[in-house]
Length: 459
Image (cartoon, rainbow, N blue to C red; front, side, top):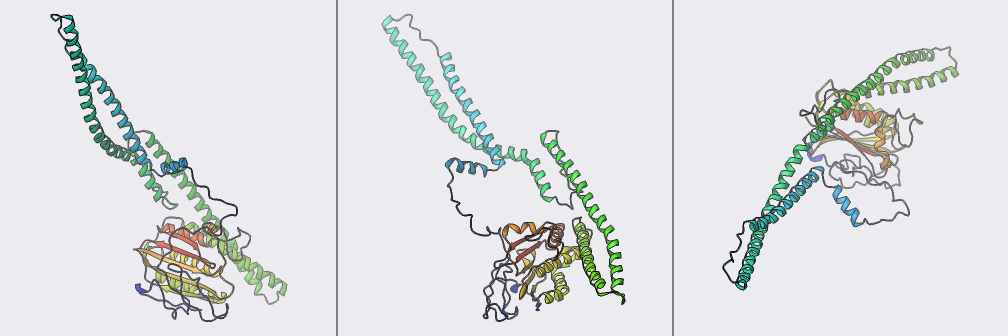
């Protein structure tokens, strides 16, 4: 059992092999899966490999080969065009629509003016006076006069068309700019709704509302409907949290009484061995139920808005969690390697300690039965506070990872196998992280196990 702690920003990307007992993580930030032993799996020297920069990014790839018999069908030109159209945002769709309508209106107006110019010249063109001319000459003069009228109409229309097309091009560019501004102004209430929806969480439903100001139009009605829905959701969430908290409090009393009675019965020297065996079994079941109730209480508390905000150094939090769980890791045969650097944030110290402890405890539970490894890291990466816990263990399919953060969810089992806990550990981690304005992600570790990364706002 080794729990080394190191500091210094220049060591966050890697630790010398001799300080880690010969094993160096290779996953971005932590990737402890590239270890090969000289003696074929028995305890021995571990060959270190190069450490890559932290932290892991991107979604996990498909876990396993593609299904057999699946062939790639290239998309048709119509499907490519539809895919291209689908990538255009609503703002640009409205802009293009406004510009096209404006351009079509300009073309129609140009056509009308084009026709009206000819009619105006023909109406204003004076008639030729051939009353005093001989008939043969009068016909020639009239033809010459009509040809001049035709040339005047044609020339005027040509000049009008040339200059109007240039003006229409400039007006078309102006129409695109104006259309974009109009679309942006029209979508501003929608942007306000989107921004409010992004900030919403279970702890901010009580006071976050859109509260759109303006005329009673369709967008105002939509915003008011959304606000009413948020109010109903807040009532539902608050009722659910109160029920969980109250039910947990009510259940703690009989469980405490049961534990006291069982401990007294086990302490009776006249009790038979069968009775003591039954008492120990019931005491273990009672302890499991107590842990479940405590987990539900903590989950209900972490989903509420934070009532305590203090400066916290996650290095100290991680050190405390590792020290508290060191005997359990040693009992399970798991070697813990900690590389902890100062990473300060603001939040509830108790909840943050429980968050890191749950990650470490979960990594100890779901590890290899022999020669398991566990890595804990804290530090700053690109301005964000990072806490990462990685472990060896069974293979975790990529499609199962997100479900592990749901309450009462375990890998390959729902609520059948409860020997390793109630399935609330990662749920509490996610609730605590969200309450502190951060996010938590998990990716399968190559070779088995999981890499969980918590990102929080730095103070």
